[in-house]
Length: 382
Image (cartoon, rainbow, N blue to C red; front, side):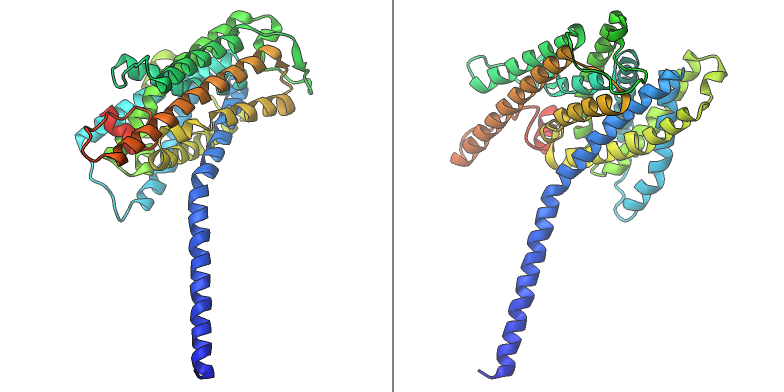
């Protein structure tokens, strides 16, 4: 073989090696993207809870805060959604608009109860209560007969016990304070209302947050159904905020007759609205929908405990919150129950996958509501 031929072979080999490395790197980045996206979404969620609490401490009402945030988020998302889907814009119909309106209505109610609950309690409690969403989704699925309760199945019992444990943890973090573990690090206004003896407000906040979790459980499944019908994440998010802005604006005009409540002074209110619209609403919802369509409801729910840790650390370090034993125990119980539900779902999905691959002639099984991917979830919910 001549030197020129051997050189050409070497060049080709190097090109193939470089191509293979780039391909592997791209695959790794593609696998890591949903994890990074959900971590960013949880950080945005915690930041939204904290800054909304600060804005409402200035006297801004929940109705006005939600109205401004939805309206600004829809304006921000409109050009981005049209630009991203300009070449493959899916057709719209009245049926889809009805689905969008229903999604916005459920999301708006979840927003109202969520921010009201945070206003009466704290961002840490609001983030901790979100761990109830997977378990409550499982209970709603049983109530509406989307999943069958088989007490003889170990995986079903694991999910049921995990749900009950999560609910018990929510009661602990809401009703039991206990001794302080970490005292305030700064002389700022504390979020822990129960420290000032206003235990009833703390309990009422926990009740509102629990209602928010029930509504959000249905909202997650509804969004998965819509994404199956209309696979354009950013457009779905835009229509969600667009209809939510209309709904929240009408409700606010009815509930708040005094026009002075719309004032954006002090400046903290304006900053809170801008942050909530860009990061807390538009970016977070976009990341959530993108990860939901690719990895399913189970994956996105697995990051809820991360939000609890972020909220607790941020509250203690930046806002001088006191960390109480009751809050810590309650969060641990909720997380244990949460992962019990997730463990049962993973084992159930594995058994279902093994059963389907072992025999092609076996009768089709009804997939659980919280499947391992969005498509399974949508097929069951539909």
